[in-house]
Length: 383
Image (cartoon, rainbow, N blue to C red; front, side, top):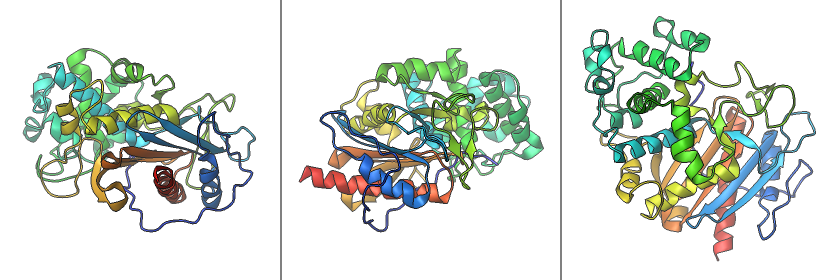
């Protein structure tokens, strides 16, 4: 079963913040508000070992906070410089990379799987030939959520080749079967669809997706902490550990993240501050004033795909919230050992981000509550 998933949270109630506890809240840097004390009681309430959060506006001004420990039962405190796994929040990053390649005329939104992989013509089910990059990035390409057919998912776990070769094996395995639904007609959340889109980027550039992400996105944004897979090393607790839904810590190594074959769907990690730089890019982009891409490219990335609900753009769910003054962009992510969520409110010119080092329902509730608390706190700052 694919571990990266997205459960789009809906805030139904507000929460009452408790008094700061002793779970490791980090003091703010000079001239920053202390949001660590907002995160602390929420993390403790839900049994989350560690949590980080941020509020960022369109100027890039960011308020950060951290609380808790890197490993349950350990003494190493989480800091705002620690790296957290972003799960499916990687998806919009892959879409952003593809938009750059569209602007560079390496790809088009209408580029099809058959255009990029003509050698698969004899083995590809004919229904896949017209599936476009845009359909893959909006979960409307008919790509399955479950990759168990013919043992593909197990084979991807055991694959020993390069990440690019793993993504090619995934692509070959998927297109040898019929699409789950007629392409372009139905929303079906699929990590494999984003993996194929990422592999299309690899094929037209001759570069690995990881290299493209560093070169085109992370380096220009100054995201120096960004990387792939579970952060840290197994020998020493130098970074937070992911934890299962039951709270068991998982050291970096085999089984600590999804196979690299679905990397473009969800294996990026970075610090909360670096993630805020990326989210600020999309906040500014939605307002028509951002680097790296033209305004029309951001408009395309943020536009819900045509067709039946839900409203999903390229790596973003689109909905409405009163506190945002209308439209918001949101997504969350988890590989079952981490959880994160972000909400972007373009009309209010701010976004919130929260991540924790545990998976499961309690982690999702913790991140939702912390996000809402930061939204409320931001509203008081603006008064």
